[in-house]
Length: 172
Length: 238
Image (tube, each protein chain N blue to C red):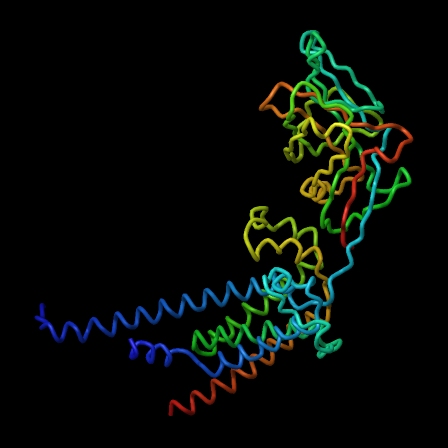
């Protein structure tokens, strides 16, 4: 079992996963500190009051509006590539996947009617997915979010290239 | 052609293959979870966008002259159309020897043509509620009802509108206890569909559900009394 775990550990890139999780944690803080609890599904659905809004001062300022878009794409690219431990081609596929996913969801907020009608009605009975329609209808399309997604993807590619090079060096 | 493999050699060959497979499965499970969590986190957090848009609330009274009901006489096979009555009926009138079946129609202009509030054509509907004052519930303690999204001419109801194909339906029950009260009905799916279809008027038809043939309901619709007039309240973002 221990050997199995060790072998599994050698198949993943822990450095990438940790960077991804660390940045994701930072993104979570934006929602906990800077946003009112009724604006975030995860927070207002939580049985315990985890919001720090109005307890701690507004920490991220205006950059907190688009920072989550940056954080999301960046961290999920790193976590996924860390688990995949693939070559350059795999990295490009993963980067493209998360970039497109985030872009599609952001554009869905611009074309509210179209995107909300594409959400199946049975989603309303499933926790988390029940918020899909509201996400599109109540969310705001913001060009800054698109820029943030693009920047997050570019920075993630840069970090991947560094962590990949280091791994290659270690392997030598 | 054949090579005999002893027990120890067999273990050496099989074990790495098994471990490799387990690692692969584990990795794919982890990645699937990451993807699911990644997508859910966009939906659950609002996707990291800017502040949510303010929700605008619009209240629209029905266009009383365009409201109406149609009574079908199954014995004489005739229709009686009433435009703008003070009470809109739906269901089966058991007091009538011919057991007339009524269907009620409500019209809510969304373009402000009657002086009411406007719902912009590209507005996203968050929720929609209909309030109606019930002034008659007869012959059954519970009246199963269908509310259909329909389209009929604002110039007046026609015979075809009695049985026209509903664009979308939802069911609800009226109760004897609703008599003399305002009943609030969540009609969000119907409103979203009307908006999707780009209707200038949101039109509804009340029909006695086909699962029963007993029940008769009256909706008050006085020409100049706003307190009991059918009211559509729409929460939307724009």
